[in-house]
Amino acid sequence: MTLPQLAILLGLLTTATTTLAQPGICQLACNDSIQVALGLTCTTEILPDDLLEGNLDPDCLGPLEVRLFDAQDNLIPSSPRVDDTYEGQVLRAVLIDLNSTNFCEVQLRIEDQYVTPLTSSALQVTCGTALGPRLPLSNPPVPAFEVLDTCQSVLLNISSPGSLADLYLDLQISHPRIGDLSAQLTSPGGIAVDLWGNAGTWAACTDAGLWVRLTAAARRSYADFESDCGAGDSYRAEGDLRTWLDDSVSGNWTFTLCNSSASSSARVDLLQLGIDTSATAIPFPLPAGTTISQNPSQQVTNSYTLPDFDNCSPAELRFSDLLEDQSCTDSIAQLLFRTWTLSDAYGNQSSTTDTFALRRLPPGSIDFPPNYDALEAPTLDCAERSPSPGTSPVPNLGWNTLHNGHQ
Image: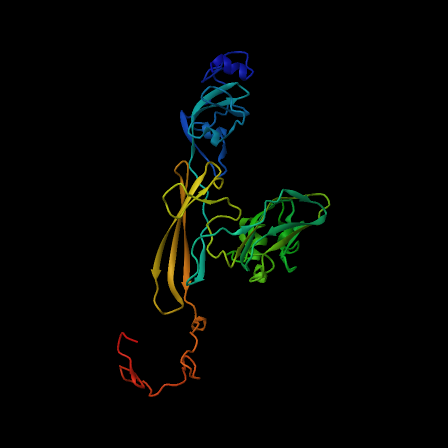
């Protein structure tokens, strides 16, 4: 684009320059070029401070405006925002002081330098448990809805056999006064648990909204949930979410939100119930509902494709295992360290390590074979010890001598 064309675009009557259109009034100085890293949402906004070199001249009264142009000098419609459509491209940014009509230019190189983080797990499982990862169950997506001066219930359907091993609820709710809201979750068996109430310290939470994960395994308590005004973290609920442990998970779970305000609606933009059953003990490091498929096109074991987990590009997820034998001092036979690595199309990576303790089964879990010798005595009779082993280093039980290393 030529300068006269830019002047027309800006609605100017005279040709602008890249330094001073009216000397002594406003001097804009921009960096020559900058790299722009797209955020986790795969979009970012270019601000005037991003382009300025040094402090703004006080003679520039503003307002300042940023306009972005592609390699063909076409104005980017989303200016001053840019997304992964322009990843890897060099754009031109024009910073304009609308009062003086002066401007300066910067070259922008758009890069994706972020990848969505993974979530680690620490579990105990019994020896013999299948260690292949499985995604937790989740309800189908729930369209956004609003609640005003009433209670509204939403059904969250989970269709799977198995009993509950773990549960979490992801919520994003917009409302100016959290103290007006209360919520409850009811299992398919009709057992209800209070998630939070509209009493206590909630009354002090204004203009905050909720963006939280509620789970029994959360480090932060319900008191923290109240004092933090539900600001972007994992918390325990007011009631005990372990109430449903070992209950059947299949059927309709019911989320009920009550809003006592008659003037301000509560808008629910995210409502996701994630459930692990006894059949899904080994999770992926991903939230429930993530689309995932095993990668059949590569000769790589433990490799998966995530088409939409990362906002900028498809990603590949792999894991490798390290198994460590433990001593016989407790019930833990081995520790399994599973390291996950997520790579996106632009070479960015994130990783996390799960720790699984493999627990020995207790002696009571041993199934002895039937008694085939036609004698009435039990298979093992632990009450009889004749003669007593005493203090001999080589114990002699009746006629059978037990030698070191042999049974």
